[in-house]
Image (cartoon, rainbow, N blue to C red; front, side):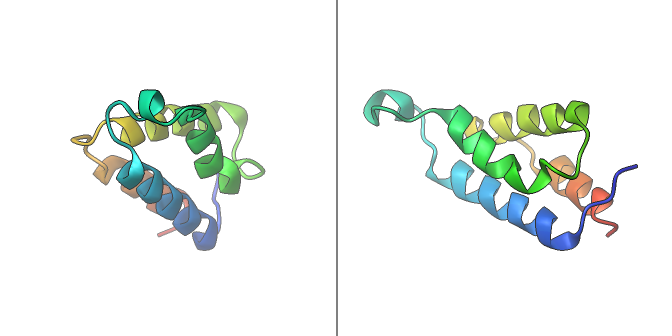
Length: 87
């Protein structure tokens, strides 16, 4: 299992929270130029040099869903970040 330092995990969690909090249905239509993929890319920057590509792709997929689905259960994501940061 790949282990990342806690600081990186906290950065990812913070970034996902900010993006999920500021996202709303219709945002791409109301804010020209907005692209959720840019948010996903920003959220995963702290993981890019630490995780193998398949794991990074999995995180991107989960993060995309967490940003766009306000009722999504975030606990598994938080638990996975804790797991890979040795918590």
